[in-house]
Length: 89
Image 1 (cartoon, helix red, strand yellow):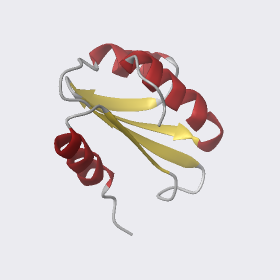
Image 2: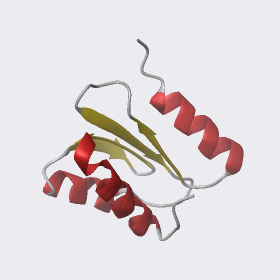
Image 3: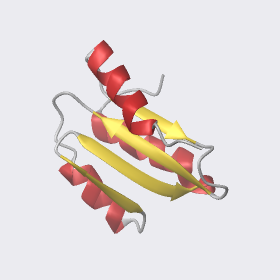
Image 4: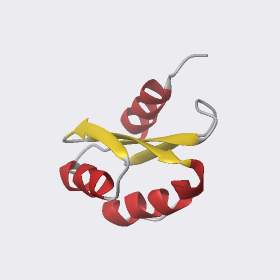
């Protein structure tokens, strides 16, 4: 019943000093939450891209939260990972 995705992502990012993407698949029945936190990447462009694609998204320089339909989650995770220039682990 508690939405702790922000806290979980923050702890991973601060603890590892790495870019972190966390997906919460259990908070909504038909949508997933994506939460991104970085230590040094400007996520403003990513936030704008996700909004342009028609999803709800917001955040600030190093944090982005988005709500996406469950059938779009993997596609969106790929977009995020590509934006960050990394690999999905």
